[in-house]
Length: 140
Image 1 (cartoon, rainbow, N blue to C red):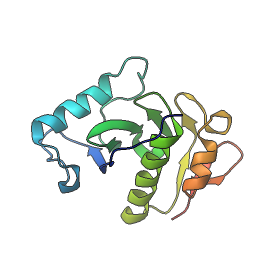
Image 2: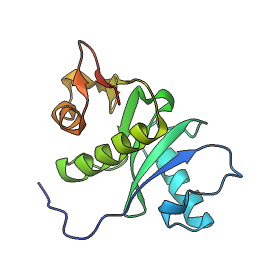
Image 3: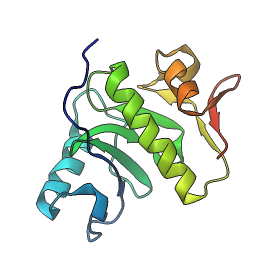
C-alpha cells in the first residue's frame, strides 16, 4: 500500500448543468473543472460514471478520485482503489453529506459489485456508515 506524502486538497464537485461554476473550495479554473469532469465521465472500464445531474465527483488534489452516482447508491473509483486515498475521499464525501442535511444515504454498489462483498466496506464503516444486509447506510 502506498502512503500519501503530499498534502491533499479535498473538494466535492457536483456535476450539474454545464453553465454551473465549480465550488469555491475546488481551486480549479473553469477549464480545469470541465476537463476533470470529462475525464471522470470518460474513464475506461468505468462506464457507469456518466455525467448526469445530481451525480458528484470527489476530487483529491484537484484530480477526480471517486464518482458518486445520483442518490449515492453507487460509488465508482476513478483510479486504482487503495486504502489511503479511498479513506480521504470517503471522509470528504461523508462530511459533504452531513453538511447538506441528507436524512439517509444507502450505498449499494462499489465499482460495480455489491458493497458488502467489496474491499471498501471496512472503510465505509470507518467513515461512519452502518452495515446493512445489502448496503452501507449513513444517517447523519
